[in-house]
Image 1 (tube, rainbow, N blue to C red):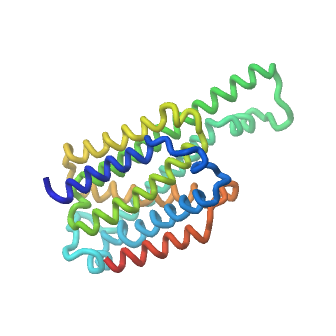
Image 2: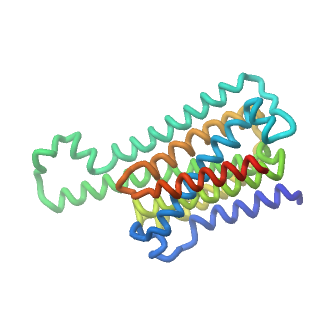
Image 3: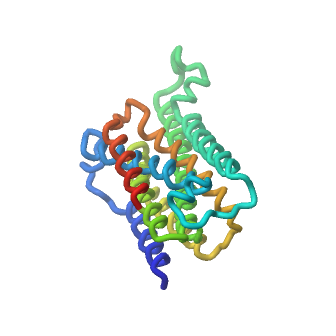
Length: 265
């Protein structure tokens, strides 16, 4: 077994473990400033990775800084950046779809700002149904996202250098901490009941597909671009809303430190 393959398999176990392990409740508490700082730090690391390593890999500057040999793609590098824009838009669309299925959006669509009619029990059942629909949309979208991350880990494209593989693993491992936190905070009971197993299963399935399925290099390059846009949008959703109390200082610290580390290695 090669060193890169062993690293990929170990990383897969770690990624799945992030979702499965029933960490103590106090660690997840929104009132715990330490954990909020960790999530902000993780978001900064993920964003730094996208801008310093992932996307520049497809430009002459990125190849000169990070790799000895340039990737030979059959299309201009801006196509990868367009794929990143597509990923950004797809993730924003997922966020809007989740909100559209939520009870708050339904009330606005029905003009309920002037008052809701009906029995309290009926309204409560309607709200629960809307929450369940929003949860399913969010979980399926994030499961596909986790699967894509693990697919690209094991597909072979990132195995051009040990440094590139390790950089990807570290950044995405921190990023998964933030992803789990978002799901755990938004849908605590449903996620801890079955959702964490779905996310872990999606991660393992993505890794297995990466080992078994060999796509053309240009397709994997476009998928990396899509992933870059998704990571940027996902971290934006995690950190920008004020009600989630993101720690700006830790976000910047994570980005600066990991960017410096990537430039050094």
